[in-house]
Image 1 (cartoon, rainbow, N blue to C red):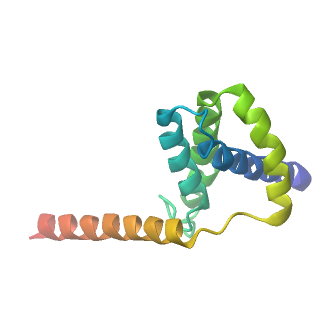
Image 2 (image 1 turned 180 degrees about the vertical axis):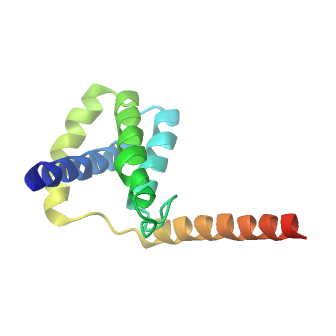
Length: 127
């Protein structure tokens, strides 16, 4: 059972890399790029919609939302692009995920703004 979960996680990681590469391809329609970029950013983001420390619920986004997002994104991308990106993704998995500090900073800033917005609105509702 542990090997099955491990293989599923490896497959998920591979699909994220495929989407990452497909997002950069000029043959992918703009709407698919936007959706795919959101899925990849969420998957690579250290911040989850539901924090992992919350029992059971914390892992639901990783187990349900991310795979559903990946499935939808893969259907939006042309098959020829996916085929090309699969080869590149295999190589990328050997080297590790890409490090883009600018995008990472933007993601953290967006989550920070969302948290500040939520705190302000909750404070207004309490008063």
